[in-house]
Length: 212
Length: 212
Image (cartoon, rainbow over all chains, first blue to last red; front, side, top):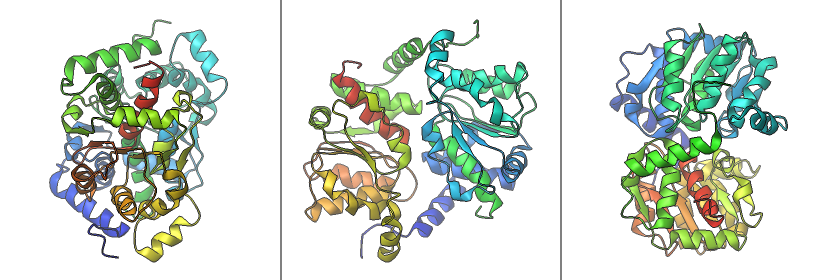
């Protein structure tokens, strides 16, 4: 059919990635990290996001190794969980979100905190060697850092992209200032979101398959 | 607990919305529309999004009436579907996404198009009086406009917020230039995404309950 617009999925990806690589300032990243940043930009339509990325040198390798070893992918919200492309995962990795766990609402009420933060204590059994993907809630990222300080199991990597006007900047600055030895990627500032966070995880998995 | 960050969910919302209203240029919107734009900004962390919003005068009323009448909420991707806050919906409205329908992949292959576009033909039975929420795929928005031109049932309102580098700008410009009589809200330009799109729908529903 002559649609008057591009309909071929492979061509849409090709042109999208070519535009991003032409416009975004990626020179400070190594190849594996640049591939991740390209997909994060692809998810939000903003090439200047590259300037707000802060990333550990070892993030790409650590995140990919965690996935290959079968580490869980722990998401702060269902939107992130549903943005993960399951077929890219190398080890049928569990993709989890505890926000709707029936224990969470009551725990949040008792602690005077958000459900997003209250769920973090329920991550412990899967946290060792997991990749944590935070795309919505600053309080989840703050609470994760507290839990690590309290002796919780250590995740293999953190994708820190909570979004918004209260705590988003501060929670990511806290991660960047002291990542507790955990390799991470973060989007500095108010921007972030489920799509950007999920894209970073998908990029780790896609890199393993040579999808770039 | 003295967390060193704000943990009260109501206070987080209050401060977030106050910051958005202080920073964003909302004066060209009526009250109901401004409430929607505030929630779209809340979802992405960018107050300048207001400048890219194009909206029909009748969008808020038409979208809310559709929800009250029990119209379906049709989403282009699962991330949008999982961003819809079900408890806000006034009539136990169906929240649908056909992307994973087993018929879609084969239809897309045969038509040489994306799965996002191929799913649109499966919307027909729910399309009359529905609110369509497009937060990812330009080809879904293009195809919806084609389907309306071909005589498909008329949705009650369209939320047009596909994102990215190939077709996002053009599909939204096509909607804005000729909305086929359907009330709409769109984010002009490359920006958009599941969170912004879902937030617009949630704002319609929240407005009904007086949550603002």
